[in-house]
Length: 357
Image (tube, rainbow, N blue to C red; front, side, top):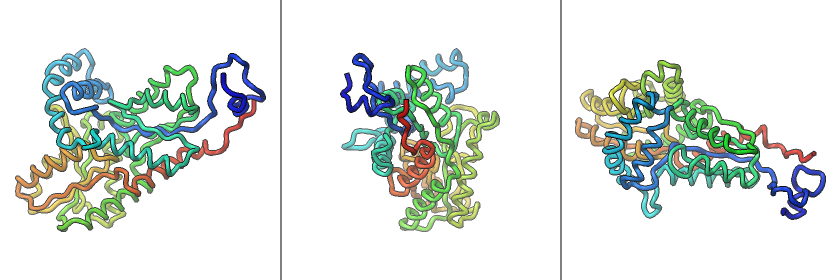
């Protein structure tokens, strides 16, 4: 039975009945959701993660009757070991966690400090742990009855942003008393995001010990067929690049836009990052710096695919200097950007809640 003070603080004109279920004081919550991470780098941890990730119909749009035998057979027999080796190269010690998990944790903690105790801030992963369901359940248990969900993808794609909201709604379906929910739209052209990117890129480039011949903005790719079906991701990436170039006074020839991380035999968005890195030295471009604006936090795609494999590709093709520019991570400009977006999206719920019966 709740104490009298708790009962009186709720939306009642008097104390709750003696057998009434406990009802906590109402709160507004902000849930940050990132892509996901394996729990560890061993085979079975990687297999569980990849199975969940590659079973998402937003990721692989083939019929499960066709795709699942392929996935559960050859792909999940061999790919976990390969992916595990990639994760081992970037796994954080002594934290014993992936960089993506570490930086998302830090973003949530620092954002909580910025927003204050009036907002309950938490984080989750679309694939792996902590799951979206577990964090929505936890926030609900803390009294959150109005929830803003912020998918940490600046550029919208059905394979990323929509998948986060799909999973969030699946979790909400199981709740008897659902919170009111607001989802945050893409922020690829948000002034706070563009400012954060520009400040971060300019600072890191000025700190290099060489002057880049070109800057590459590399975005995670999607199959071209998804774009042709109406996914706006390609347009969002191009607009982000254009706004960053304009902010920093770069020409389109100096700052290139490419796409990485293609999977399977179908055509993906082009130009491909790896092919571009291979071709540039033959064109006389010997020094490059590369950033990945689609990723808010550094992860295996930036720290292994770009910083290690990308460097090898470029240098073996005749490059002389190569730098990978860090993602926004938990830098002050990153937290300021997230706080600006969060405050705007939380604003309709920022007024004190009425407790009238």
